[in-house]
Length: 273
Image 1: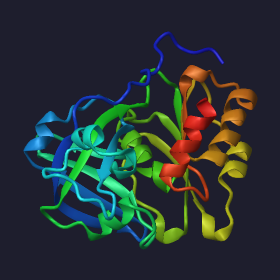
Image 2: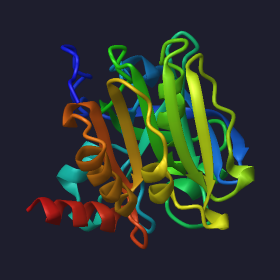
Image 3: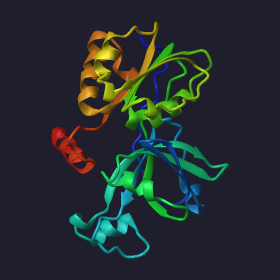
Image 4: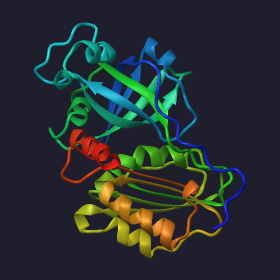
C-alpha cells in the first residue's frame, strides 16, 4: 500500500517531573469503567503533547511501606530499596482541558483485583494522585483516507479520544471487545463510523472478527491496542495480509492474560533483552 507523504506523528517518550493532582469527582460509566476527573494547581505543568493516545504513569504507594511526606517518586527511588518503590500503572488520558482545569482518566475495574482499579473505585474528592508524563504514541492522521480502530476496555479511552479528532465524514471502522452489552459506551464522533461491539461473555472473538471483516478503501491509519496475544495476531494480519505500511500502524499490547502489570512489564523487558 502506498503511503502519503505526510506520515503519522512518531512516538514520543514520556518525560518531565512527576505531577500531583487532586480528585475533583468520579463517575461510573459502565459496570467495569470508572472515570476519575483530576485537577488542582499541578495541572498547569501537565503538557498536552497533541496525541489522542497520551499516556501517564500513575504511582501508587506500595502497601505496608511508609513513605516520607510529601509522596515523591523520584526521592523514593533515590533513597529507598527497589522493593519499596511505588507500584506504577500506565493509563491513557481520556481528556485534558486546561481551560476547565481538569484531566480525566478512565479506569477498568474488576472488583478488588489490581491496584489502580480499586483505587479509582474508592477515590473521593481531595484524594491525591501522583503521575509521570504524559508520553505520546498515536493520533489519527488527517492525511489518511480511512481509519481502523481495534481494542478492548483498556484501549477504549484512546479509541474514544481518537474518534473525537477524526474529521467529519472520514470513514472509520472500529471493533471494541467488552464483557457484555452493559459495558458498551456511547462514543461521540463526526466521522463516518462503522462500529462493532464484541461481547466476551458471548464468546465473540476479536481477532477472528477483524480478520474476516471488510476493509475501508485507500490509505488506512490503524490503531490496534489491547491484550498482547490478540495484538500479536492482528499485527501479522495487518502487515502481512492487509499490506498496511508499518509507519501507518500504531499497535501495542497493553496487558497480558494471567499477568498483572508488574509481571507483564518484566516480561516485556526480558523479551527486549
